Length: 115
Length: 117
Image (cartoon, rainbow over all chains, first blue to last red):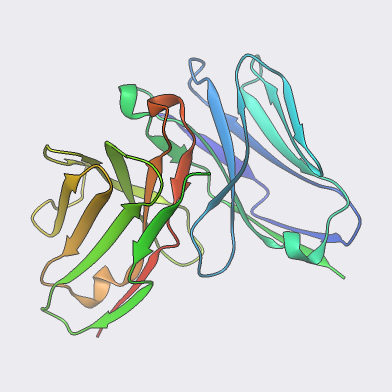
């Protein structure tokens, strides 16, 4: 199945700085890459996603970039705020999941924004 | 956007009893729902794919007789943990795709914290 690796596992930044989280995937046929934010005690919330026909997508302070050749995609958060502190997960479709499009998740990144 | 509601948000039960968790799609129909399990400080692990009107598909290593899944309608899937033991204590999260089928984003419920004493 798809193997998704995520780095770093923890990331601390000062408020106002940028944060970058990277993921690599193994299946070159993967064509959809979502990012989720999970706050303590809650379910993951979709924050942004990208399909393989584009290289970058931006939504206010959040952006995702995709390098299909290198098989990696990254989450960029600019002007970080304390409320951005959470665990972030990347994901990719699992090979062979067919129409169900099951997702394989990265190991997660604990982002802490220091005031 | 698509809203997935999960109930209860937490439950404590005694060892040997069964617990049922409900997952509802509130504003859309979901022919497929997914059940995940998450241990503290770990990632989400897919347990099973729930298909409306048919049997669920379980991941390798997940006991289907222990984790009973019923997807009787297009808006409701249930997970029943039977004969629960302390090692079943975990955070269980369901998810579903919005309208638009397999190309729709996956949305998650807020999870159920199960504690087996």
